[in-house]
Image 1 (cartoon, helix red, strand yellow):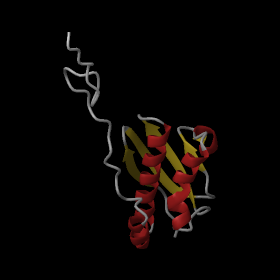
Image 2 (tube, rainbow, N blue to C red):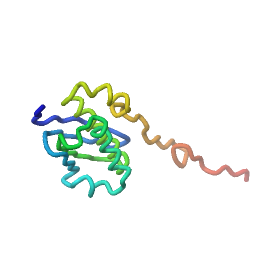
Image 3 (cartoon, rainbow, N blue to C red):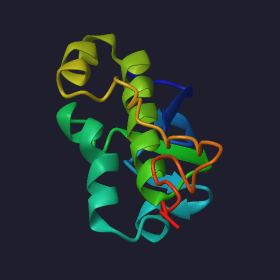
Image 4 (cartoon, rainbow, N blue to C red):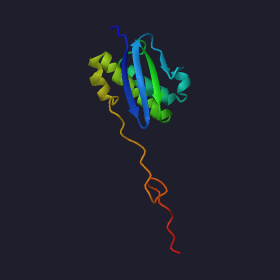
Length: 130
């Protein structure tokens, strides 16, 4: 099926990824760079490609990602979330497989806020007797 452009948003931690899916040869571009140059760690590259491998669409679509916020690990998770959402818009029959592999669930874990009267979220100041 030929598609013009499908956009979706993925999130993880503080990272937000806007993903544009279009018919192509399987090229992945993130913030104007090839994904191999943007994501240095191999684990991040593997995370990004998971939805494409599950759906057997490695060479069917070109992906353009625009990511802001967070670190590289959070950005990779956000991009995976966005790619999975975009693939479902293109091929609704993939929803079951994506849900089963956990690609559609937004990871709710966030950084805990610092509390007043403490050094951080959990760490307290050292107690002294005298």
